[in-house]
Image (cartoon, rainbow, N blue to C red):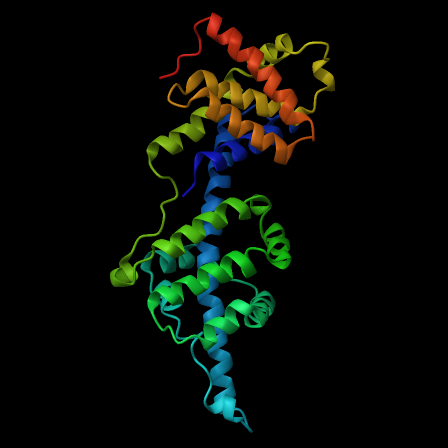
Length: 306
């Protein structure tokens, strides 16, 4: 689930904090990076479990309506389409999700659940679904994909709650939500509760990539800083945004130490990160500096790409 885009972002964030805090222990930084990535995976599971908890809350409301002192006709004969959703039931029976939820003690705030359920019920997606005569699993699955994408993941209260619950989740929702949507789409009803969720890392290579990228920057920080200093013209390195320096250091580490990653991929990924995490002009500035560094690395035969 954790891809290299997220790894790059987390590495930059951890290094920024590492340098600013005056930390000199690389193993502490690596532990912090892996913990941060684990929290991203926890968010992935928590968002899937949100579907289960919202369904459970809706079911409790229907049950309360049936037994209250003066039930209405709607209370006694409610539309159970939402609570009978086959995809939500599939997630509630998913062994991997339920085991992870229990291990990490994941649960959503009751007030948030009530408010979110109200927003779902008020949406056009919900109204269209409840009136539909398509009772297939595919339709139930598509309903939750649309609700997650258009209602839940776009909700400001969710973003605020995530920031409150964990400092590691401040910037994770945009990326992690794409994996939740991917998971919704790939879940097969025929496999029942035994179907696997996306793994934390695609393979050991991605985990090694994360650790190696971080270690290499810390180990060669002085060399990379000097490469940046030599490559800038008419600029005092002390006047450059510190985030720009960190982004460039990580980019240099990837350029030199990962021959399987094309130069243009490294450029594109780190320039996009600069647009989101640094100043307005940072991406243009970083692009120019990295261009100079790549040219120098080529003349020194240090840029060995497959």
